[in-house]
Structure formats: structure tokens, C-alpha cells
Image 1 (tube, rainbow, N blue to C red):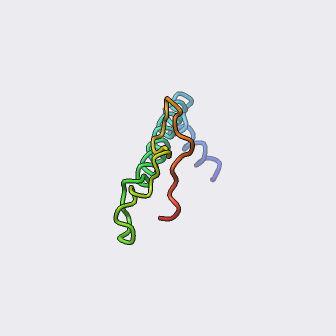
Image 2: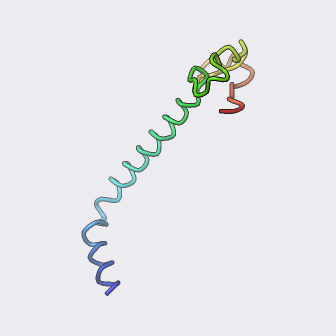
Length: 82
């Protein structure tokens, strides 16, 4: 009973041609979730009222960008607490 249900499921939903589609879609959804999480934790996003201006905590030598081409910053910015 279980074997026939599993084989029917695999035949209908797990065709070999669909594996690249599943991989690309899952990679895209995972990347989008990671990027939205990264955007939500940025220095210009305010989640609490305790610190209404978190961008004032960023020092002049801290990098807040995802990609720094010139490498002119000595350290990266990080949020201590949410």
C-alpha cells in the first residue's frame, strides 16, 4: 500500500526533468529570503522605538554595504541587538 502510493507520487511529482527546476526555484527562494533578512537588519531600518536613529551609531570607518569594491573601510558594521 505505502509502496504503491510512493511510486505513484514519485512518478507524478518527481520526474527527472523537473530536478533542475526544483533546484533553481529553491535556490532563488532561499536567496530572496536571505536578502530580505539582510535588508531588514540594515542600519537604516528601525524596528524598536528605543533607538529611533540607529544610523547615527555607524562610524565613518565602518562599511554598511554588501560589496565594497575599493576596500577602504577597516571594519564592517554589525547590529548589536534587535
